[in-house]
Image (cartoon, rainbow, N blue to C red; front, side, top):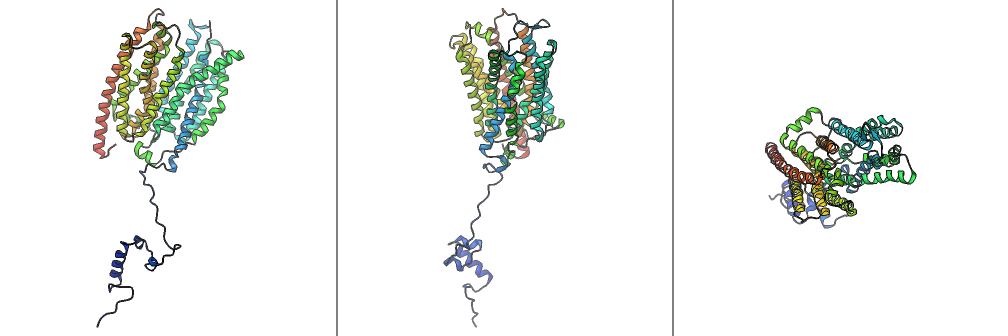
Length: 487
């Protein structure tokens, strides 16, 4: 007796036959596999068809998640960072627009005493910031910025009315909080795939802000006949509202997204033990980088602070007017060049590219005095060339070097800690240059010393940079093999 085959079951079995039938039809129409009844294949009902699911981007996707902010939001954050630090200069630099002609204090020119006093406070702030800023929680950033700058403004107001011997102390107190503002602003930007570009925008404030606030101070003195001691506090007061608005926008910066955290590592406050652990993970490389940064700071300071004497030694009685414009162009070019490193996703590859760029810059700086002495470079071209060679690696430290190094070392850490170690000792070198200028014989020609410093320091910095790279590369390679991770 032949068994009847149920209708619709052409294979003679309920389970296996139906499955086989579905596999056969799925080659024709894959909708079978998502549960659409077979009867609807011939007469489909659009209302009952299931819509295919759209695959969500994986954690490692390059798409910017909402938590990390859109490119527009990050651009706004970069502008807010620029504006915040720009406003800070209004509380730091205006007093330098005054001349204080004929006034002395303890046998020193008053302006020189005031500059040194504020510098000492600013340098002390950098050393304090090594610990304070490395441990600062994100939720306290905005209020800390406003409190630090508010304290500096109180010192400027008191500066206007205090007795003369107290005024240098007040400028020391003015510089003491301001040195920590940059680190807090930078902490909003670090640890992202776009950090180099955002930090480059922040660094461009170095170029513009000082001149603008000095011009504002000079305008108050020349146009409104304002007292030179009152002017700094007034300039600071003008920028209070823009500062508050900038900090408000900056505080709304979205946190890094999952892709940022995967490639750049979480940046969080670090304890003293964690800071030592980070340093001990690559002591030779980090020490070498600090020395290079000190060398950069010293040689840039010589070029800036002895500029008048250098131009005079080259036979130029007045600084060419085109020089200021060229300086801005060079600084913007250096910032854009470093900002473009966001296109390199791999941290080690980006760091390698940065070190090559810095090494070539040091080579240019070392050769520029030789070409100048041979008559191949005019005084203007010489100053612009060495300036570009110095500014490119200087910006690189702020945008890329430590930003890429932190995730490579695979230790808890943040850029602010490493940047403030470098900045603290950099400003210590800066103060030594100012001391040298104070004791230098005015009749001494600065140009030969400057040329020797350019060549000697650049060669030394280049050699140390190479040693630091070899050590960092060895450390990262060993760490990658241990963790089976490739950067």
